[in-house]
Image 1 (spheres, rainbow, N blue to C red):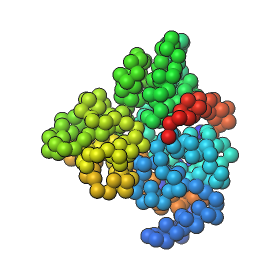
Image 2: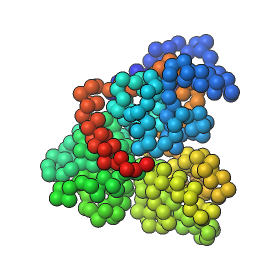
Image 3: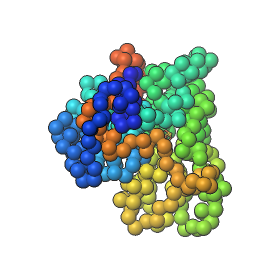
Length: 338
Ligand code: SF4
């Protein structure tokens, strides 16, 4: 993978692709209009994850979780995909749709899970367990995907693990918390990679227990990337889209939400009369549960990446084909999941 530009705003002058002197970035409504004009002019589609900043979610053509975004990226007939999420997501879009130009507002939008599991590391692990099947969470880079037998997302992981042949051991990477949760749900022992999400592992069971005591009518809902003590307290555990649907449809009027805070933007739209309380993290000086990486993207960077078509995701074809196989295996096995 070669990044043509590290970040649209911060490092353009350093890389020397564009001279920022005299370059104007519109503001306010003009910025929104400029992005919409670029979309038309370049036949581009804007895909955004639920954890993106609110203004990006509002301007996106499609908002979704990892599985929904992968499907959109595969099926789009746009010429350019402006992917507002983190790097591994934009990379997956390129793997699925190599003839499209995929741009990411800020290539420093990384992920602690993806960064903590290299292709080489996973290859070494599978050498230790030569009979094992490797199921890997989509939150990983292309090299890691290429070492996997099948990719999963939090929406389809349980279905996929259940479908794997029972006579083969399973290695699950990179999220140990999701792996542990799946192991419990499916009753299947799995060999877990020791990785975690810096956002979900920051939730404090003690502080959340206090929140529940203060809001006795509230339900705690949690993403399975959270640690076991938090999951044990939860009334409902589900993927990003499952949490959204739950808040919308459940009779309860008050929820404490243990996942990345960006999801509240869409939850408030879908359930405007319900009370939504972000779950508290260990660090008492900071009550937020925002993903620093997801929030690197801004409307200004989106504008620049669409205008200059940089930073563009580039991937070696041999690697792309290797990484594509386990993603296609996932899409095939999760056809019944919305
Ligand atoms: S919230 Fe966690 S898993 Fe998602 S992009 Fe951020 S660090 Fe990665």
